[in-house]
Length: 303
Ligand SMILES: NC(=O)c1ccc[n+]([C@@H]2O[C@H](COP(=O)([O-])OP(=O)(O)OC[C@H]3O[C@@H](n4cnc5c(N)ncnc54)[C@H](OP(=O)(O)O)[C@@H]3O)[C@@H](O)[C@H]2O)c1
Image (spheres, rainbow, N blue to C red):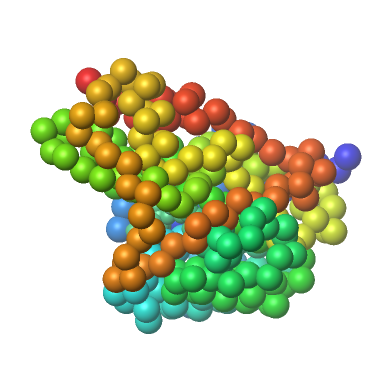
């Protein structure tokens, strides 16, 4: 087997998933050029991804063998508040990255989302027809299209709701639930409606590494891939699991809410379970049990 050139250009390296990918690749001996914008931690490079010429300069100078595009506006409510800004980052930046990657003949892995589906007929195969319910899902789907239109050898990885070590609890739609659990003097309702299969960011980082290595060994490894966790929860179900993990009380102040979300909130799909068989057939996959992953992610937040 030929030795692969281990040079990764990673966007969004300061984000929830990007931090895990950065760490994983560095630990595996890759040289990683990780970009950040407002949170430029040690080792990362500040880069405004909406500035095409700066993006091109940084990539061409670094000479990567592989690109992973993690940066995005991924909060559906924020996308609704600034559709133009979100389209710029989620679509136009993706097009620019795909063009630069194509010009130096390097594959691009675009991180996408289960929100490209409407959640009405799971499980979703990689060739299922997407039908996003909200603008976030639409911009991510357009990002997928430009990734694959510009470079046929590029890859798209759709992932579910993510959790892992956070800089603030609301950084993940999973870890934010700990706030409700800890505020025992405040009555709250938590959704017991939509179904989710959360993945730990370290699982996705490992899968990205496995995909990068396979792609660099075999150019036929391209197109759309799916991964999601193997356990299914509502938000309330995740909160109950957290309560059990940390021996915290919940039933006197948290009530499950099985009603469907109101028409005034950004619509979210009901069940976006992704069919992961394409990756599994390649021998690629990683699932951390939720009880284990949530314990390690939140341990430092619970006294
Ligand atoms: N989180 C989830 O539950 C989830 C679920 C499904 C799919 N995804 C997808 O997974 C990917 C990673 O998500 P994430 O949760 O890690 O996102 P995140 O934590 O919100 O991180 C976003 C990243 O984008 C960077 N960024 C934002 N605007 C930028 C700009 N103008 N120029 C350069 N960088 C900019 C941020 O940099 P600074 O922070 O330094 O400003 C940050 O590194 C996204 O593509 C998302 O759509 C996420």
